[in-house]
Image (cartoon, rainbow, N blue to C red):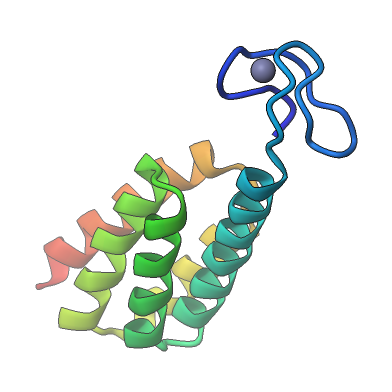
Length: 118
Ligand SMILES: [Zn+2]
C-alpha cells in the first residue's frame, strides 16, 4: 500500500500518512496477512487441497475484500464440486502469475473449461 486509503496521500515507512496523519499500520498488516493467506490458498489449490483452500479464501475475504478473491472463492468451489487432476497444472500455472489482474481472466478461462467438461 503506497497511498492512504482516506486521502490518497503518500505513506511513509511506518505506514503513517504524510498528508492527513492517519496511522495505517493495522490496515497494512491486515493487507499483508490477506496477501499471505491468498498465496497459501492458491498453493493449496495446486496441491488439490480445495476444501482447505476454500476456508483460507473465506478468511482473506473477511480481512480484505477484492474481486479477485471473490472469483478465486467461486473457482475453488467449482474445483470442490468438480475435481479433476487434469486441471491442476492449469491452476499451478495461474499461481506463477504475480499480477492478480492477469489471474482473473486466466481463472475465468479455467473455470469455463471446468463447465465444459462437466
Ligand atoms: Zn491520508
